[in-house]
Image (tube, rainbow, N blue to C red):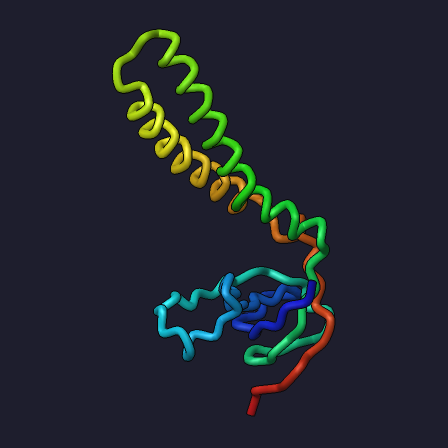
Length: 144
């Protein structure tokens, strides 16, 4: 996968590049007026193209790394929440707890929050070198 970004700073041979997060709908915000937030992600990438601050660059990301990111962001929280929901339904029902469905729902919501926190912690601990980001080329030069 290739993504373009803007070089925000240079520290030795590492460039901090800002990428605009893609929206799930495709980003036609002017047409739908839904007010989706426009966030950026800043990642460290080895400056193999001798880019300068303000340059627009293209960076590649291996599909395997993207799959790992998607797992921790989406799949892990979903599976963890479903396991807690089904497990708590079974356990609380077998213990004859009244309103076991309500308690299971509350536990699964709590599990979802915990799963997203765990995924966020793991993502932050990962070094961007683990994602195999590679600077491919400089698209445009915004320097004066």
